[in-house]
Amino acid sequence: MNNSTFFNDSFVPQTGEWATVQLINRIIYRGYFLFLIVAGTCGNLLTAITLFRAKLRKYTTCQYMAVCALLNIGVLLTNTLNLMLTQGYHIHIRSLFDFGWCRMNTFVAQWIRGMASWILVAVAFDRFQQSKTVRRTQRKDDYTVIFTMLITGLVLFILNLHYLLFTGNTVTLPEHNTTFLACFFDKNSGNGIQNFFGKTSIWQELVVYIIVPCIFTSIFNIYIIKNSFLNPINNEHLKSRSKSRTRRVTTMLLASNIGFLSLVAPAQVFIAVAFDAQRGMQSDENFKSLLNQINIYQCLINTYYAASFVFCFASSSLFRREIDKLLNRHYKPKHSLIGTTSEAFAHYENRPFLQQARLSGAYCSNSSPNNEHMSERKIQKRSTESTIETDGFI
Image (cartoon, rainbow, N blue to C red; front, side):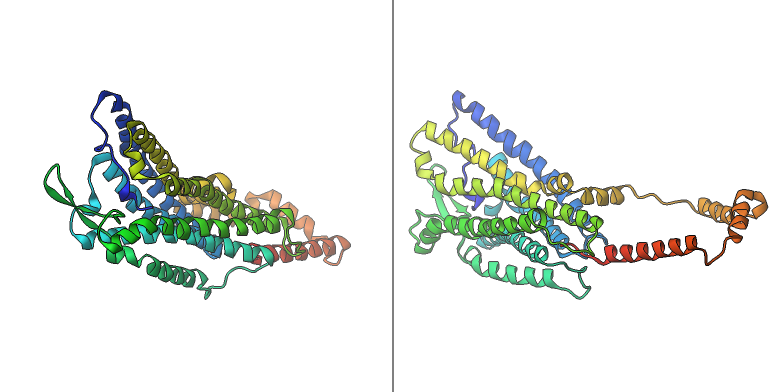
């Protein structure tokens, strides 16, 4: 939903009974939202860097999730930041300049939100496709993720084009006898275009950004759980190590999808159904109830966009291992390498136990049954390791 349409506490009556409401409103939008922007931006950036590491970026699932993390940063720096400034500090950043600034800012914010929702559908579909068949690792010339982003971005550009062309309306403030650039669609405006999009845009956002993506994501998640956990594909070449990696990445994806379905979807539906500015103005109690509902819904929605790192870190030991490698790099100093090398090539007289072991092994026949058994075990072990390394995620 276009967040600029929400109330802020400048509309709250300046009486003693509203002091608590104003205090809660400021704590949420000044304190909690600032924390979400700072912590969420750092966490999402760390998530994207980790998923783009060499060990993980060759898999399309990790590439999609890294893109989701970057898009979540965009949501935090557009919608969440706008909410913090508007509701917490009464700074209407989208209305500071002209219609061009208002429309471009709103269009970019809505486009990023749409991309963040539909990339989740893309990664769920990609994981569903991989859960049906056993695949090798991704080829270097596979541009599936790039093509998917381009097509999705183009479709959402067309669907959000009305924000770029018609957003904003000049409103006269009778109390101050001045005009104000209201950067949203006004359903009470005399302009037919403003009136039409003011009544329909909230439902368009709900259907395009929430309902349809949630339906597809839920269906794909059900089949992912069935194919990966309940009835996994049996493959004699896929060893336990590859299966465990597959489950870790699948669990990481499911955690992010469940977070979207449980936090963003219900809040957006309740906002679209329950939000009514005219109802809120009927009485102080209705207005207070409306403010409390909006605060709760916005906390849920924006918490999801800041929690990608939490979802990945809590659900996947593979992600935690890569984080540990990224943050705790240890390099051996040169003198220690030289010392190790010189010690390795030291004379046998200084290491008599090695000389004794080599001499004792020299008397063993190369064609003995013991040596043949050991050679067969080595060959089997190498073939198993090569199969594990080349197998991709299900």
